[in-house]
Image 1 (cartoon, helix red, strand yellow):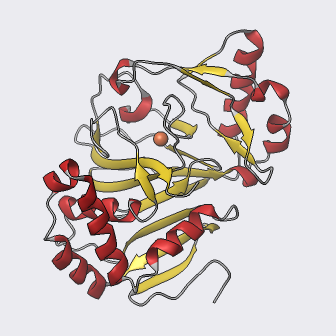
Image 2 (tube, helix red, strand yellow; image 1 turned 60 degrees about the horizontal axis):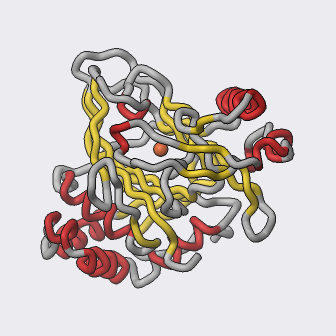
Image 3 (cartoon, helix red, strand yellow; image 1 turned 180 degrees about the vertical axis):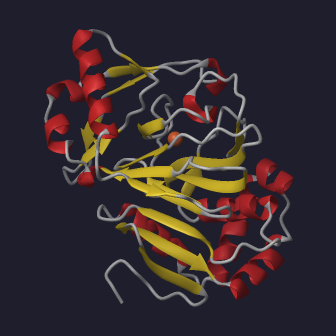
Length: 307
Ligand SMILES: [Fe+2]
């Protein structure tokens, strides 16, 4: 057994083929059957209205996984050399529908921490579509433009320690792959992290659709308690105060996008990716044009139980 991996009955656990920093967790069929059975007790409305039911569903997932999954998730996410896992099934069956995936996402996240209220959806999670046409005000739903590498929660007061993204559905999709970059794999980390301008306070706002009516201030780079670099950055929302800040952000954006160490993953329907939001950046490649393009995603962001 390699360092960072673990044996849990009913789960096939390995390093991701594209990076040893990503742990791949395949749920075997017999576990899916049991989850479907146990998840039936819960309905989505109850999960939305009664927060305690989310912990009950998380407990049932953990129990089915020999009581080990919660500890395992947390150890991956807090491990600086990893910090990311992708969980899904080998074969997608018709039994794995969107309701099941909302429940599975809820169960997984509630073994990690508390979700933040997602103002865009007014729930603890958000579901959204990416389609051919879009009239929104952010890159989130713009199918034909790259969504550049970023972290989440840059413009909110809540701590955003981690985020989960699930792919619920997809049709007529080519391109649109998930892009990930671990800060320690980034060629320009030292250069940018050691630039004092990155440690200044920046103002972060957000467009109307995000439904956040305040602005926050924080630097782009900070250090964790062990002195490791952390980043909080997205291209669209910082409001540079002067030329110095504007040019720093431009340099940062260019240096991230030109990185050769980005990991490009075509995430399959029914897969969930969970990342530590302080040292993993995520983005999406542009889709190939198609009038019937449709993808539905789910996201949950939150804080660790023990910070
Ligand atoms: Fe994001």
